[in-house]
Image (cartoon, rainbow over all chains, first blue to last red; front, side):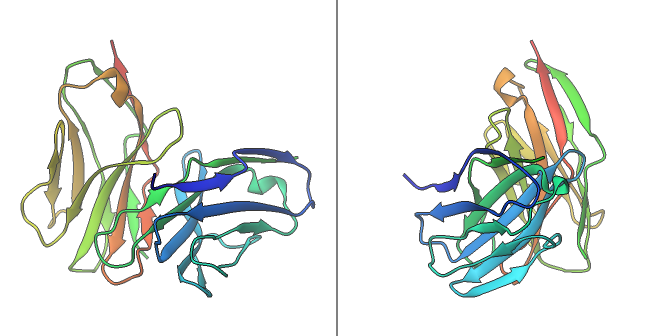
Length: 113
Length: 115
């Protein structure tokens, strides 16, 4: 089954404790992206990657890191999480090229205390 | 920068009735792509419908159709014969051509279908 898998689905942690949210897709998509969803703000892009070893900042990259060492994986790293990073996070992937919709993971609810 | 505006934070509709969700966007591009995504309480993001700006014909997917007005930069979603399963948050999204699939989302409209 074609899917984007995020882990964990839920996480409660404390300020400053490094965490990683994993994202994996099995569709051989070149493009992957991370979003955060906050009430009243919709989805905002954090980082994206056009292909292996190619990453770029989205609209809200501060406080986040990503890597793309393999085509299928695109982890999101919070080196020193803060309460303002409490949010719902989505990973998405797509083929590159025009008119390609993004396929989303099921989301990760992060709470930073 | 591209902006996508959904001016209706919340809407409701009676079951079996028709509802229209509005979306406007701002761009100087001549070609681009527009999408509507549905997010039910399960939080999944589900593609509902897509439209290429160079196509004049409005896209249709079963009970879902769009009214695409390029000059007005408007992209509304019409849901006919509303069903309880249509209750969800709906997001409008914009993608420029040749930008590596970078999406811009609106703030969403929460739709409730009333039995």
